[in-house]
Amino acid sequence: MSQNSPFAFTDAFRDGLPVPIPRFTGLPKYNFVYGHNDPSEVPAETLAQIASRVIARDGALLGKYNLGHGPQGHEGLRDFVADKVARTRGIAATRDDVAITSGSLQGMDLVNQLLLAPGDTVILESLTYGGAIAKARARGAHVVGAPLDGGGLDMAALRGILEDLRQQGSGRSTSIRFPRSRIPPAAF
Image 1 (cartoon, rainbow, N blue to C red):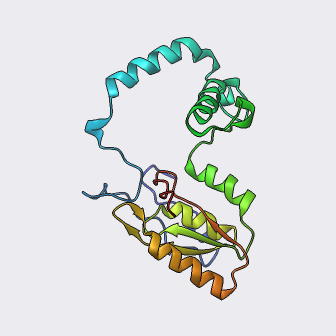
Image 2: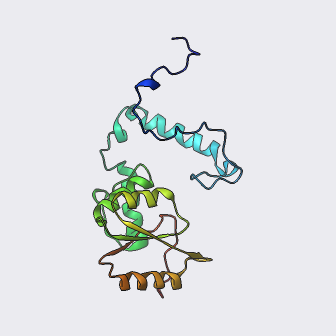
Image 3: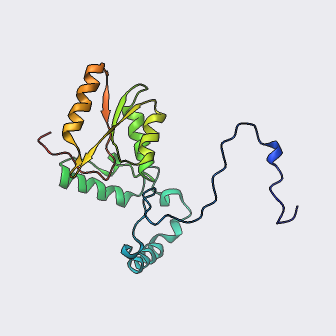
C-alpha cells in the first residue's frame, strides 16, 4: 500500500458506527468549547524558566509515573494543597488526605462515584462544562440545569428547582458545582 492509498480496512468495520469525527479546520473566533486561555496572557518566558529549573532538578524522574510520587500525585503539590485548605478553609489535612487528579473530569468522576447513585438528581449551572453533564449522566443521574444571574447561580430559581424536586418526591438530590464557580452567598 502506498502512502497516498486510502485506508484499506473500512470493509472490516462493523455496521452502525457513528459519523466520523470531522477534520479540524481551526478554532472559531469565539471559542467556548474548551478551556483555552488567551495566548497573550500566558507568561511563556516565565513558564520556560520554571520548567528549565524543574527539569534540571527532577528530570531524571520524568520516566516514572507521577515522578515516582505514587498514584495520589506529586507530594510537594499535595503538601501545598493541604496547607492551603488548612489556612483558607480550616480543614486539617495532610498530603495523605489529598489526591491530585489529571484534570477536572477525573476529579468529577471520583466525586460522582462517591456521591451519585442511579436515579439521583444533579443540579448544574445551565451554562456549564459539557463534561460535567456527561459524567453525571454516565452514573445514571438526572441532570437539571439551574439558570445564572450576574453573581452566579440564580438563587431564587434554585429554590424553585429544589421545591419542584421535593414535590416530585425526589429521594436524593445532589448538587455538583462547576469547579470554577463562585460559592453561593451565606444567605442561601
